[in-house]
Amino acid sequence: MKIRKIQIKNYKMFNDVTLDFTDSNGETLETIVIAGLNGAGKTSLLQLLSTEP
Image (tube, rainbow, N blue to C red):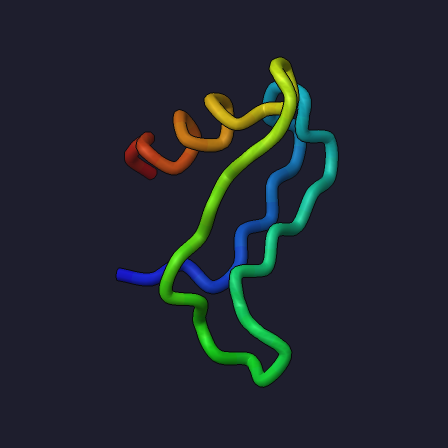
């Protein structure tokens, strides 16, 4: 499964965020790197993705 887009509302520090994992042609990216400073939400994003609906 490849994720194309995620919209997050009211989850921990994410009030209203949309993450788009497609290139300029609309093709799904093969590799996604999640990087940022401490406290930016990297672990929170991964926890959200690992939860069952």
